[in-house]
Length: 150
Image (cartoon, rainbow, N blue to C red; front, top):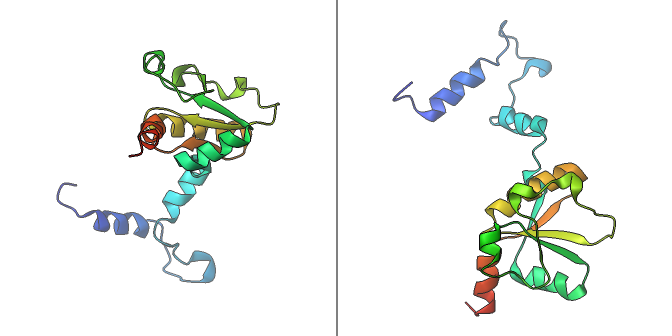
């Protein structure tokens, strides 16, 4: 459908959901635009919205209180270049949410280089636990920038 505007395609798709007999009662009223997308997202069990972004100051505050299990999900090669102090390493490829022991009550916080991979891992963890997962937004890049005062 080259050349057809996206809005026209959306309207066409929504019209396919309209009642066949043309009645507009309460039960067959058209649903708001985007309803199908929101419903599909909810049906897939996506935990994307269950991942909480922490900034560096928030993470430092949590670390100072001492009840945090900080997990670096970068590759071993990246970790060799340095880690946030007291973090443990579980590479994203090896991360199995069902194998994470959460019994000690510590809050799990994930991080990676920029925050992309830790968000993905956080989504998996949130699905497993049914609770929001936390990750360092901006990853170790943001951490290092804050340490340098940038």
